[in-house]
Length: 73
Image (tube, rainbow, N blue to C red; front, top):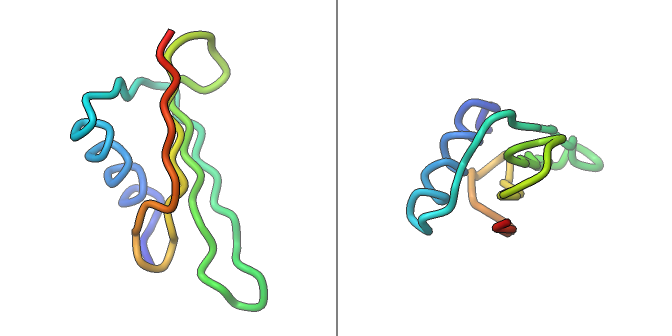
């Protein structure tokens, strides 16, 4: 199981690979899995503000990126 810091670093590395902005503030939410499942982390950059945003969903057990998206403004 990965921790929040590892999830953020995974998202930051993927953003760098894709040449996406990764700006503070971050909104990181840990969603617990049902029936003892691993759950996931949802990470949003530039949280609560207008402008460029990146969004990642990361599996809490494996650290794999389940989905990602980017809005450039």
